[in-house]
Length: 248
Length: 176
Image (cartoon, rainbow over all chains, first blue to last red; front, side):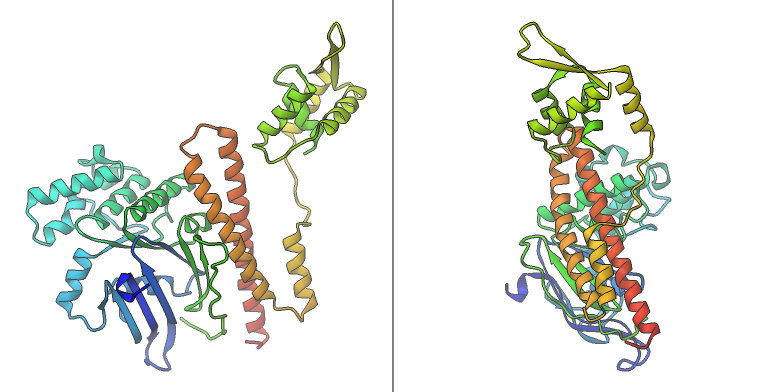
């Protein structure tokens, strides 16, 4: 697979806090390639570097060593305008909570990223309606976030994350606040998005939800300690063993 | 759980002959527990001896139908009402990890990691099946799959805990 087919790529990435060499290591060194249409889960205990990995992938934070590329664009070498453009047009985010603005309807919430990107109001709303329909809550378009269930809010958040031409979704514990069956339906929705060519990286503590992915990556103390692939039972990739170095 | 209770459960739905009991038993367990006809008849004879079922032979005695007695209903009801106490730690994985720790010379974190990878692979297959099955209507299959998924989840959770405890243990003793 050539590098230009990867939607997300980490090459020898490290993130340290404080001194770039001797500071506390939050992540890495880590290599990671995620192709178009893949659903990848990241698992690991608290403090293992899962959220750091997601922040680096989304350009919300930067590596102290190595290269993070999204659609072949090196994030550390990008200026703020390029990064803003990337976050608005390529990357969507879903978090456990604080996803939606409470004063806006679900439709307005989903249309917001497009309007911020200069898309005409009518076009943005039409696109938002389609996205809400694709996640099965078109009928709730005029409701406000506080008036719908947790599962419906997460569906709206996923619709907003994928509105427009975005192809990469970064989700941090998207099912964390949901009951088991609702969480499962959210994962199935993410799975369906990947089957239609989107790429998704999900951080989760829930093994069953993680298992909906094509690949499950385990982090511990900032290092990838294991990787399990669904495509071929024999394709488990032996990875670096835990070294015991203390991290954040 | 015993075959006895399973057969009483089948017969509580109405009288049945031996082969019907066997197929109904297997359908009720989603195919996870299969019986041979010999097991069914041996168990039926014992249940009859204990007064929990009775045989209703037809005129030419060619096909015997069995039905549950009042005493059998009571036994079944008691079984349903008694919580399952599965506190015995005898599954192979647990014992294997415990012995690996005792053996000391073995790389226990590697064992845990390998087992967790295998369990996750199994869970991926179950979740794939779950996506297919949730559109269907067979409640027995769905409940059985739920049970399998939750057991593998628990196994992974236990292995995660093992790994964390082993690392903590070794750090505290200056081994890392």
